[in-house]
Every structure is written in C-alpha cells, then in structure tokens.
Length: 77
Image: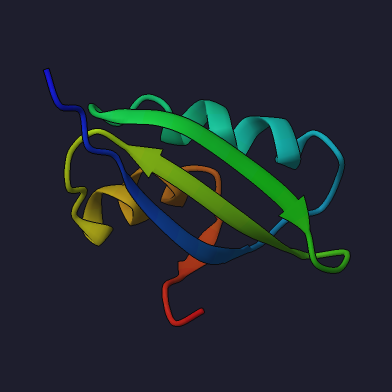
C-alpha cells in the first residue's frame, strides 16, 4: 500500500517559555491525520513548526487548535 504524507512549515507566535515547545506539538497532534510535529525556537516569542500529516489539513483547524492557548500561527513562511 502506498502511503503519502504531507508536510507544512509555519511560524507560531505567543511562546513564552520552554513548555510551549512541548505544548504546541501536543495540541497539533490532536488533529486527525497529524503524524509528527516539531517546534524549534526562532526567538523568545516565536517558533518554527514542522507538521507532517497523512491527510490534507485545513489551516483553520490548526488555528483553532492553537487559539485556546493564545498561540498565533502564520502560514506565510
């Protein structure tokens, strides 16, 4: 069986501590189809997210997943 994954890279603002680097992947992995998430800090308040999914994901679902914790994704990376 052929398995195709999709990758998306974007930035997230609103980070304020090391725990944010762990919380963001936890929140995004709750989205159906997401198989892997990594977050690397860019500076004290912004991180670069790499997300891998087995299915296409609507940007709105990512925004909704992060909004409850006051993170703001930006998809124009």
